[in-house]
Every structure is written in C-alpha cells, then in structure tokens.
Length: 212
Image 1 (cartoon, one colour):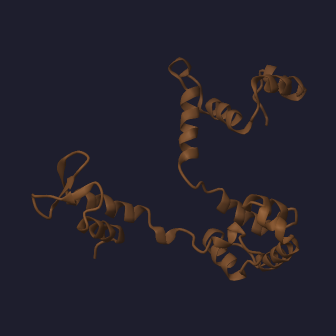
Image 2 (tube, one colour; image 1 turned 60 degrees about the vertical axis):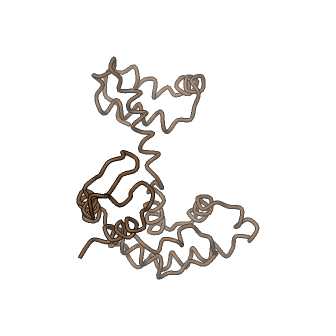
Image 3 (cartoon, one colour; image 1 turned 90 degrees about the vertical axis):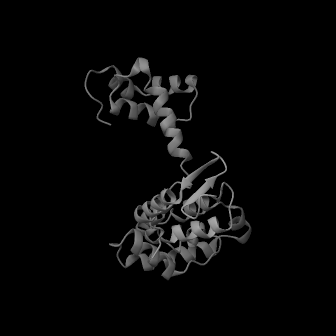
C-alpha cells in the first residue's frame, strides 16, 4: 500500500498540478515544467516514502486549539490529551490547574479578553502558581511556526564566524549570538550597560572563565 503522501502526490499528478505534467515517455516519468525535462516518477515516490518514514504527522501533538485561548472555557480532556503526548509523566494536579485556569479566564473582562493576545493572556494567567500547565504551554509555544528563526540564527553565526575569525570556539560563537539575539540595545546603550555592571566588567577583565 502506497504511503499517504505518495497517494496525495499521485492524486495531484493525475490532475497535472503546477510544475508537473504527464510525460510523453509514459507513466513511469513526469515532465517538469521548470527544468523542461522528464524525471523518473520513482524519484518522487522514493522521496515521499522517505518523508513519510521520518516525518510522520501521526506523531505530532493534536487537539492544540485550546492553547490559543480564543474562548474563556478550556476543556480539561483536551489539555490532558496533549499532556499525555508531550508530558506523559504529568501528575493529576493538572486537573486542578485547568480548573484554576478556567476561573481566571472567567474573571477577565470580555473587552479586555478580546484585546489581549494569546501570549498576554498566558502571561496574566501564569501570575498564579500553575507549574504543570506552565511547563506544558511553554513547550507548545516554544515550537517555531516556521524555519525563519533558525535561518536567522544561521545568518548570525555566519556573520560572526568569518574567514578572518575562523578560529573562534563554538562556545564563543554561541555567546556572541546569544548576546545579539537577547539584547535589543544600541551600541551606546550596551556601552552604558557594561559600565554600570561592575561584576560583569570584573569578569570580562579577569583571566578566569566566566561562572555565569
């Protein structure tokens, strides 16, 4: 039985979707309109089978809609379902935490609730002590929605690890990138910040390794 993505590809291929058309060589080939050449259909099948094997969508967490907090009521079973997928060792206290969550949501005025973003709502909620829920939501919201952030990190690393600075250790490059990403300061502001932090200045001028 063909993997799901292969079936989807074949469905699209049969309707001649953009970029791929039927080849005059027969059903074992596809004509690529971009490279203007016939390509073995087996190549696509092998690629898609590989994707199905290593990137199985069935393993991805489901029923995550509640995290967006679009409503003032969160279903306990939805939270438990996700918790079992991401945090299988979570204890039963999460039931009580969801009840507390719903109480907090109910106390937010409708007008304010509509204006707040998802992140702002969770920030408001986590002023209360909800450790299991905090850990669960943190893991979910930390997943990037695209590879743009990763690409940005590669770009920042390349800017630091140049041909003339190719002897930098990985730890040094990591530290430089962390400063670049986490400090939204101008050169003048960073200069003032460093001058105001005597402990950090002592660490910078010391020959010993930093302990923080």
